[in-house]
Figure 1 (cartoon, rainbow over the protein chains, first blue to last red):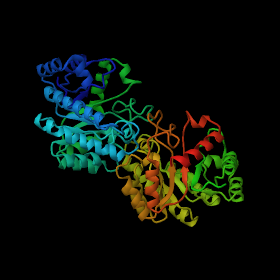
Figure 2 (figure 1 turned 90 degrees about the vertical axis):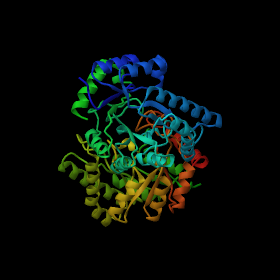
Figure 3 (figure 1 turned 45 degrees about the vertical axis):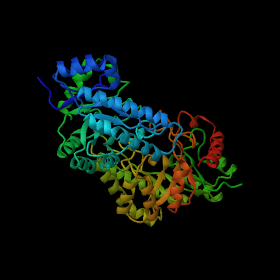
Figure 4 (figure 1 turned 180 degrees about the vertical axis):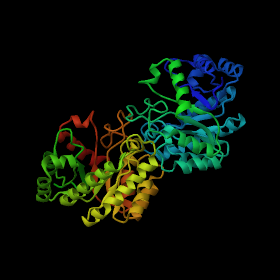
Length: 274
Length: 274
């Protein structure tokens, strides 16, 4: 029995499963959409991963992740660009819907976020020709402002859409509820993203109260305060009907449980609270 | 020797000092501007605190704090309004420049942040007549989006200014660099706040990388990544020339040190990196 509209970001089962085990766990439960991370692909090998994807007719709602453009010197920025070109190749080989970008924060020693943001834009400009030639859509993921310093200096949907607009029609956004749920301009941003055909992915999890760690304490859907159905309806009304991709970083809780328990819980919550 | 342009929010020395000790520590070092918390005033008594303030000619750059308007039922919201009226009385008695507002997050059990935001606005409307009669300016402090669930559902300067605009000319904003430094629209927001004469306070500290706790891991100026002089120049250009108020919540570090060490460090950093 297939489960429609649900994708598993393989970070969610990272605590116990690599790529192959996670694929098996998903297929056993009728889930045919996933979003893997590059290190998980590297561990099994790109060729083998692509074979598994094709053999099972898996949909990849994204490949995680490109980005991390800012660096303190030109060599560092070039290394990031080169690595992003390889990420594009991998996304193309795997047939992913998009390559998801966590754009990077302040370069070491810098306090100038405007400069970091320009480095991000310059980095995208440098890789865009290769992305176009490879027919890989690029999805900018605006990250919660608490990651502005060390992970992503693109922090609101509006900012991501403005950047995508300067880059071109084949650049879009990955909307992760965890990062944007608080935004007073969220409804406006989602509607705009739909009008501009830039919604490439829809990630879900939940915001826990209290949140005990800035990075690794995301909640299972239903355990936090995000209005998941409300945001889903906005995204659907904006014209995106792709799977909801469950991405949960949870070092203290879900990563400690067996992948089977995590997936069974995801499915139950997907059916009841999303 | 007076130190001009520096105010100490007494949360900064909370680890070792109450109101009277903190005032002594400031005066000894030539600091004549402070911003106390209501629990610190209550501990010594409002009358005694006001006597100390007047006796020493202290400037209060703010009283912390009003707010926390949203509640699950009408009785809870009324209790918050009543408490905010008392906070206004205290700010008036102490002659504070403004009463600073941490507006509150989602009421218990709610996932509807739009409703919480309306409760905040309704709460302000309910206390405004008393604030006007008492001649106490109200300063809305937009809090970092990581506090949207449990502390403040007003999370950007633009949002705070829009709210202040609906409330009236005697409502402004407290701009704390910790909460707003990441905002891609920060320069625009500060300039607008200046044009509208709504900058009532300027709080400083620093954003540490990594940040180990969402609430109590703020950094001493210079230990993090915030461009403090850059933001100060924007605020000065917008017409605010009041003291920079140092507000550091630091359970793991500064609250463990003697108040004298904290203040001496604040003064050194104020002179070198702000």
